[in-house]
Length: 308
Length: 308
Image (cartoon, rainbow over all chains, first blue to last red):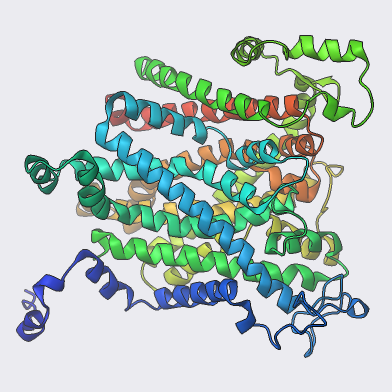
């Protein structure tokens, strides 16, 4: 026979019952896990880099070098040194500064593309899940149609349609990635809506005469958003590498934009002479992506009651 | 079983048409004249232009173009590549075996690594080894395949000179390195699936029954647990195979393997719209076909599914 576990009554009493919310529980689980702190550190580092690159690169760009990238052609393609931590690139620019400034484009594309997928996914997922019927069939079959197309092939098709004579812009790539991403969110969100829709409190809201819009956004959304939040955090990481992959294939960001994908793809042609040009942007790319994927994993476990 | 097959087949039909129409529509709105794109600034001979217009019905309304195109597709004619001035079927006869070899070899490596790794991690659940397994798989997921490909070329191919790094001149040997690269980036998902399904199986009643009968732990594990846990893993391996037909684009570009993925990136650069349409529609068909087969195998292994 095992001893019954003693309950610390004082500790139970100390928990204010009103504060034991779903999110509060998730936070209590998260803050005990070291992997959560690692991923948070990675995310904060890279988001900070994207917003204020000047914090990471100093001294601040002078008037004689407005690009702020410390380029001196005479120093081209040096290996890492104490003066240039990551070496220099083909144009003699300090590679550490380049790689740091590259964070912005990558994260902006990932953030906006994720926002597109989440907003479109939640709106269509709500419609399909809440109303069902013919509307559900149309939305779900269209999503299936998107799934049948390999992701990269889809991106290739959409990007070739968006490319004009003037070339591509950053928003083209963002829209293309968002356009292909929404079906997964629709599938996920629709299934959570179906689960939540039947619960008593939704029935109660209906009986009290709440309109459809109010039920969908005030009652269902807060209780169905968690899996989508997990998915979109993980997909932020995925999009960072997809964007780089598209740039590598020559159908991604414009060549003159400073991004990790462009740096890696250019380094690929000089890989034997200057491997450091490949190594540093790749490492940043991998760690940025890892930060979001790892965070998503931690959130998943914190939100999932089975792990509690 | 047959009725289930018919039902799944009927479900695929709308998906097929939505997906192909989507491809067709997006590619038709690509700016510029698809025929002129092949000739740059030069004038196109009138008879050549007429031949293309007649072949692709460019002068018909869009819905009719799609209808006539589908008619060809159902006669296994994918059309002509405008840039190469050859039937796409002929190009496929060269490229498809290369992509198929690459995909099959990759799936072989995925199975070879992911199954033992997943078993190992499940048996060591919650130990340091298991946690490191989680982090390592996440890192592997975060490395974009083209970065891994470039690094593999640099080290294995150029510095150590173990395996060929480019082209297909060395026969099967030239596929080893690219397959290993694909396997490394995909095996993480499969290995983790192996781990979770095995852990789920450990909790099943029939395992307790097997132990109660006095079977050795070894027999319980291999015959009762592992065999059942392998079902979803094998399914995912089959899905990998389908996805890889269209998913080796990046690796084929890095390693210069003129397979299907290589062709489609080339077609984008050449603005060869008929080729892009043909290849994408073929990939959709391949994906749907393999998924149908996977569903059938699954229904055969688990009779509950077909009476659903």
